Length: 201
Image 1 (cartoon, rainbow, N blue to C red):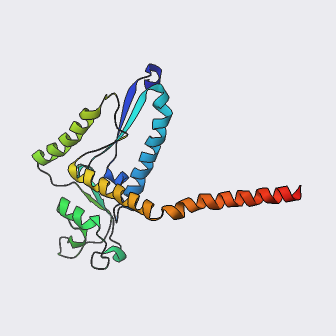
Image 2 (cartoon, rainbow, N blue to C red; image 1 turned 180 degrees about the horizontal axis):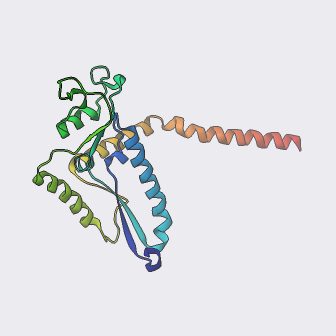
């Protein structure tokens, strides 16, 4: 329909996880990065039809606090007592007010491990505020003549993405010679092949 009208704006809701990987959330990060790669490709495809695509990235809290949180059994290698890397499991447990490893059955014994889920315990006011932040972000750019390819919601998300991009830029500069040397190696290889051909003829 948008292609036929040669006008439109597609808004895709993902999260800052599309920019920043989080320990313990590899599958979540992979899914968001895949979706964003898909959207980037589609954006180029529909641009000739005057259709814009914007990826909206709310803070991670928006996605976590507005959805059911699913807990799988904790792998011992990633237990906070064994692994110093910060993991979201403890944070999520605190958010929903539920710790699967501490749950006891009616007899007071620890329950068998399994997959369990809980909704975050949020007040109506807090839930409304989270939703309104995202709604405001959507309405601020929806229908804009020249919308951004990515729109990050919230101060924390903006700062985290800035830090990530700064790190990527610094690493690129640190290894720029090694990166560009690959082009030189290719050119030298092509030159040597040319010399061999000339000698052969």
